[in-house]
Length: 538
Image 1 (cartoon, rainbow, N blue to C red):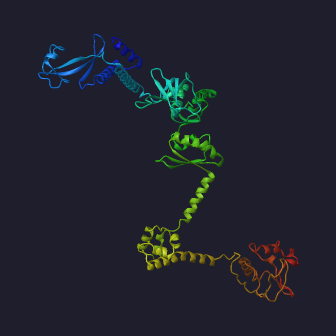
Image 2: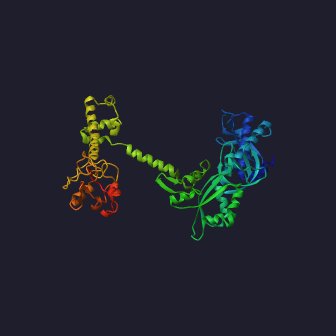
Image 3: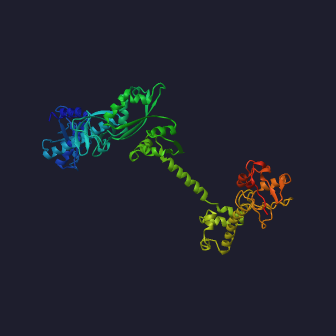
């Protein structure tokens, strides 16, 4: 029994906990074993004997003149056997024999000691590692428990859960691995230190070790997003204008980043330059895709829309949406990606919606509909004249406070509303330009010389007809008529067979119909033959 105190010291050094904590645990274990063995209601205490180094169990009793409760009281005479100075009102300790504790009591004491020591060890580990989150530690794989690895960190063991492992990695017992401290669990089945190989902090700590510019704070890591085993995006920023942040992380011929890629078993790493401008930041975060434009939809909600060329859409989204998902985690914004074709279709739909949306019901106030009726229609969910016009009288009467008389007023207002557009269409159809093909024919003024020639036959031939008496009645242009009115005296010739008009001598016929231009030629009378004249034969 003299070796108990020495065992406590050895155990406290091994577990790295205070010896007093172990001693208190042993005392509690002895008390629990004594209560179970003696099966008494006595008040028991345990204490370390300084002389022998043993743990002794005592029963506390109150000194009284007349004993009424033997389990908690003792007479003065009996108390003097344990303490010569015992008096009424004092407490004395009555030693209990620990040698009588059996094997079961010893086993109970052992379990209590182990439990107390384990709790003390957890508290010690928690206080030591609670402020070391994200720290890089070197571990040795100790054993495999299910899908979790238990690794040795030196002073204590840590757990590498399945969810904190990279899917492309596997380890054997004795392998050395580098992990980051993910957290510390104080209670529960898996209490202790939790380490991770899938956290973004692992990539950040590896860059800090490999890149001196990051270690001395010339280059800082602003954000990191990772999907372990597949891809990582990391944003860096240089505090020195002469130092390229991306180039410093890549290294000469990519040596620095390649070292980290080997540590992560071939995981792809995208290094981008951080920017305070969200548009620039999002554009770089979506690399290697080329972005056409970025639009901030809601700055407070951090929502942007990205438009890319059609061939770049799949690259911007990435495999199973990985590229845009990592970019959104990196920048902290919600990103919507659309192709140029999709954006064009969306704009077309918006334009159509704007056109089809229709006129509000309130415009019927200008067509005689009373305001309280408009309010009832709006309350019933009828917001446009088009919707109102498509409803039957029965549907209108189903609306509360709408009777047959009000339905008539509504119909009159709708008819008046659409009637204004019908009137406008009629006016526009009546006003046609003179030179249009559908214009009204104007009678040519009578030729003072008796010209009665008409175009009646094939182009370039002159024929006569007694049925057509008005000259140029069928020529649909105002230019020819006005020109003839100005130049009729100067450009009219007479022949024995009839009156013939030489179009080649008429000035200002540049706007004449194309058939006349073909017949007119150069405009000189001498260059025309008989087929170039329009006349009236006998």
